[in-house]
Structures are given as structure tokens and as C-alpha cells.
Length: 336
Image 1 (cartoon, rainbow, N blue to C red):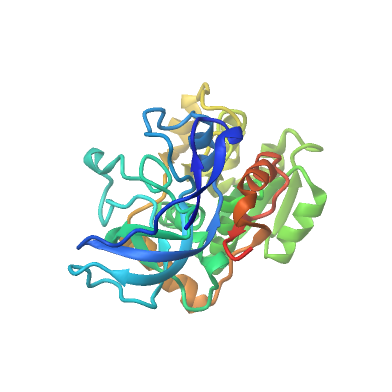
Image 2: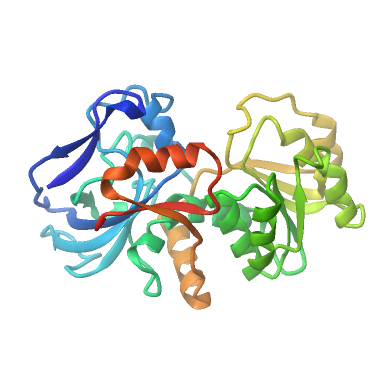
């Protein structure tokens, strides 16, 4: 079967390989992989900036979707023919994350999805929504679940206001999911064209942060001086101070990314006097994932796919993501 392997750190070391097709062990599910989607953590793994102790070669990429071919004798969750997606934090079933559940993440340290057939533990998979095809379903495990969890932890409800930074996968899902909850969404982008596209998805206010570098004051003006209830902070160090300025009293800042730097000086007085909750978010449990799936199916929400590449075009897809020009998610179609 075809597989993509990372033989050393760096995109130059992505190699197409021919490897034997696996068979499932008692607690495993054999899946014919049909699609994948990219996340920034995939680049961190490939570049050697995440899990440096990972065993190479490794099959990269965390998020994928496909169809169950065969199940091990102890598996009751799935049967042949079921459509599934991977579940990134494969040991986190419910409740709060625990340290002993780390280290089994699909796409590093555990093997990823860039292979035609793959064995997964039965609890490393989730069902795919009935109204989505494989490419759409493959966008859900990390980006959609992270956006969902920010809004869950913030207890976002109708009439509140959310600030979303950027137009990547997490940000666009946050926009879509916030609108489903009846919230108002203010969104930042460096592109007027992208801002127009977010308006079509329901964004109420768009701010170009290149032409308006001090955007926090504009956010506060748009909320009549009160500030937003929730910030989906996907950037990190370079934007965090303004996110704190933009958030209102008793607001919530969900920190999910660090593309703008992983270090910052935090104005503690703003956090204290506003009673702001700041929480790091990195996906969620399988229980939360299944709640998200129920909401997606009930509303028939569809992900936004920016561009789709073929199986052998992983490097080109990664370079497209790193260029930062995408809107929503980048997909990999295994049939191409």
C-alpha cells in the first residue's frame, strides 16, 4: 500500500513508500483512509519542533477520515462499512485530561493518517457525520473540536459577542459555531477579500488588522465600550495584550495558538480588575467530540475547505498552509 513517511525532520524528508497492508489486533479497527486535513501541529512535528523524541520514520498528519474495512474480535464500537474519522487525543475519553494519557497522539508520537490502510485503537476513532463526505469529515478532529471547546468552556450563549482572530481552520469553525449559538462575531483579518467571505458566513463586524493595527479600540467601539464576551486567541504573543484590552468584564480568553509567538508579558491588572478567565485549549475529550457531532448533524453545518491536494502532494499542501493564505481548512484527497 502507499504511505507517506517522514524519514528525518524537515519537509525535504517526506518520502512516498510502499509498505505492507496491516491486519487489526483484537482491540483495533482497520480503516481504508480516504482523506486528510492539515493542522499547524503537523508542521511542528515534521520540522522537529514538536515531540523531538518521536521515532523516525513516522507516518505524519493527525486528522483523517475513511471507511472501516475490518475490526478486531474485541471491538464493538464499529463494524465494516462504518464511516469514521480519527480522534487526535486517543486516550482522552471523558472528563479532564490527565498526564498519563499523553503520548498517544495520532500523527506523532503515534503513526498518522497518510497511508492507504491504517489500524487504530477503537477509541482513537469517531463516527463521521452522515451529511459530510470524507474530505469534510477529515477537518473535524482538531480544528472543529478546538473551536467547539473554546465556546463550551466560555459557556457562550445567544446575544453574546465573540472576537475571532484570523481565517484559519479553528477561526472559521469558531465563526460558524458561534453563529449557531446566536452570538455576534467580530473577526480580524489582514485581507479585505477574506473579510468579505467571512461576512457571507455570518460575521457581523470585520476589521483589517493591517490597516487598523490598534484594533482593540475598534472592537470596544463595536461593543459600545463593553468589550467582547469571548476571545478565540489563535495567534498568541503578538496579539494577547490587545485581546485582553478587547475582552469585557468577566470575559473569557481561550488560548489555542502561538503563531504570533509563545512568550508574552501579561498585564495582570487587566486580568484581575476585569475578572477575566484565561484558559489554554487543546482539543477536548471523545465525549465532547460526540456532542459536537450531534450539533453538526442537527444543524447540517459544513466545514469550509480552502484547497484540496492529492495524496502525493503533501509537501505542496504544507507549503500552502505555511504561506498563510488559506481560508478554512486544507484537504488531502487520497483518490487523487
